[in-house]
Every structure is written in structure tokens, then in C-alpha cells.
Image (cartoon, rainbow, N blue to C red; front, top):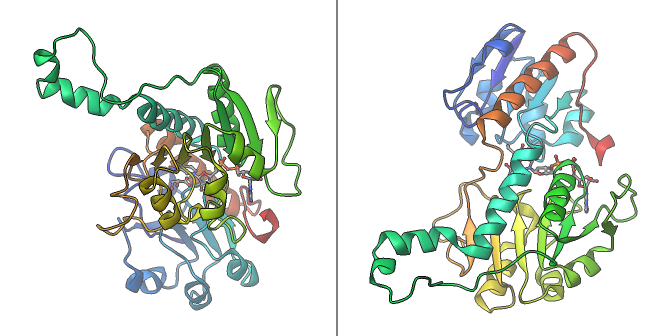
Length: 323
Ligand SMILES: NC(=O)c1ccc[n+]([C@@H]2O[C@H](COP(=O)([O-])OP(=O)(O)OC[C@H]3O[C@@H](n4cnc5c(N)ncnc54)[C@H](O)[C@@H]3O)[C@@H](O)[C@H]2O)c1
Ligand SMILES: O=C(O)[C@H](O)CO
């Protein structure tokens, strides 16, 4: 069985091994695949693995032998799943490998917004403390989380772990899920509310829903207007959840206290991206998933997905049925 990995570099920059996958077929790993080469590299392979290389309807329809797409990620918005389903191609993702890593990263971002540790550390390194007259100084207001409200949009695996950490910080937790869907039970202390109420009452809004036709552009000018001007927005899910210019405008006009974003709609972004230059906006390069512990789990679950498919009992399948 021919297995083509279209963009293996970010999962395995050299510190992991492809051997587990190699036992299951003849594997070709490309570090990355530019748009113009996707079709050619899939060629007549039966199985393709992708992290962020898009598999559009056109690509899927041209790949005559393709029977399986393994997404090397939790978010599978890079695959046209309707087109895959129509062609009978099985698509799997890797759920839960990075739940704890991503939730931890949410708090790394939030604590940076609250304390601006990097900026204060730089100030000390550049000699400001040595020249100071007092034993203590701050360059930005310092913010305590205890008693504040965390609003979690998308109460799945990562959303639930963020809720646990928020409660450990003494925060009140509001959650909102898919409109009209139950999405499982609430945990004690967590209150499920409509999105509009969550936006209006939260001091921190953290996004954890997938990018779908329903959630694209979810955080737009109108919804930002519901948020407190003192609130922080955190996005570790997908950049497409934001109307990015609207978020940049809210930051530029002082209608939002800060944003911390691990994801943008286009990655890497253009040098003149409006959020890259917006005030009080921290942007990290889509790295919340990247702890070696999480990538090891991802690699192992991805190989398990391939093995299960080859044994005729696919697991972790995703498709229009998940929507
Ligand atoms: N930055 C990173 O490195 C990184 C790493 C892993 C995952 N992610 C992103 O995080 C997302 C969430 O991951 P997860 O493991 O928690 O997934 P999950 O499937 O366990 O949870 C997603 C939740 O969102 C809910 N949801 C769907 N549509 C919604 C809507 N319209 N409004 C509110 N909620 C909605 C679902 O019902 C589900 O409960 C992934 O889809 C992926 O895009 C990012
Ligand atoms: O969805 C995911 O798992 C992350 O974005 C890494 O690709």
C-alpha cells in the first residue's frame, strides 16, 4: 500500500520517527507540498496523510486510487469532507492527542496578557531595574484572574480542559456549544449560556470550536460589540473563526483590551496582516499543539488510524456525519 505524507515537517522536524507508519506500507514523506504539486505527489497512492495541505474537491476527484485520507491533526477543515464522502474516501483525524497541551497554552497566552512577563523581563535585561528608584515597578496594569469570568465557545475536549484550569484559577466558567445541540453534560460549576450572553458577561473569551461553514467568521463586528471593552479574546482553534479585520479594528479603537491568537486564517500570514501590527495583540505561530509529548501521541494515533483502516475497521473517522 502506497502512503504519501504531504507535509510531515511540522509533526516530525527530526525528533520523532516515521517507523510505526513505515511498518504499514510503502511510505513517502514530503516535508511540505506547494499547492501546484499536491495532485502530482498524491499520484496513484491509496493513502494520503496531511496536516495542513488542503485536499479540495478538485484534488480528491483527480486522485483515482485514493481510498484513505489521514489528517495529522484534530482540526480537519483542510479536507473537503463532502467531496471525500461522495467518492467513498475514508477520512480520519487525531482527536485528544493535544488536549492538555493546548489548554496549557491557552493559559500561557492568558497569563502573558495579564502580566506581560516578556516585556517586563526585557525591561530588566535592558537595565531599567538597575536604574530604578524603587524595589518594584510595572509597565502595564497587572490583572488578577480570581473571580473573573471565563467564556468558552466550544465545550469539547479542549474546552473542558480549559474550564478545569479556569476553575483552578478561581474563575467562574460560562460555556456555549452548537446552537440547538446538547453537546454532553455540563460539569459542576460550569454554566451553559447562549453565545450572546457569554460574550457580554465574560472577562476572557476562549474559542474551542472547529472551523466549519457554521463557525466561519463567528467573531465579527456585531459580536465584538457585545464584549466588555476590558475583555480578552483568545483563539487557539482556527483563524477562520474570526473576522480578522473586525478584531484588529476593535483593538485599534480600544473596544477590546487584548487578544492572544495562536492561529490565523492564512498561515503563515502576510507581513502586513492587520492583527500582526494591532496593539495589545499577541500572536504565536500555531504552536499550541507542538509539545513533543503531544506530537508523539499524534504520531502514534495517526499510525493506529492507518492500521485500523487497513484491517477494515476504521477508527476516528470524520465526515459530514460529524457536522
Ligand atoms: N492551535 C493548535 O495547535 C490546535 C491543536 C489542536 C486542536 N486545535 C483546534 O481546536 C479545535 C477543538 O479541538 P477539540 O479537541 O476540543 O475538539 P472537540 O471536537 O473535542 O470539541 C469541539 C467542540 O466544539 C463544538 N462546536 C461545534 N460547532 C460549534 C459551534 N457552532 N458553536 C459552539 N461550539 C461548537 C462541538 O460540539 C464540540 O463540543 C479543533 O477543531 C482544532 O481546530 C488547535
Ligand atoms: O488541529 C490540530 O491538531 C492542530 O492545529 C495541529 O495541526
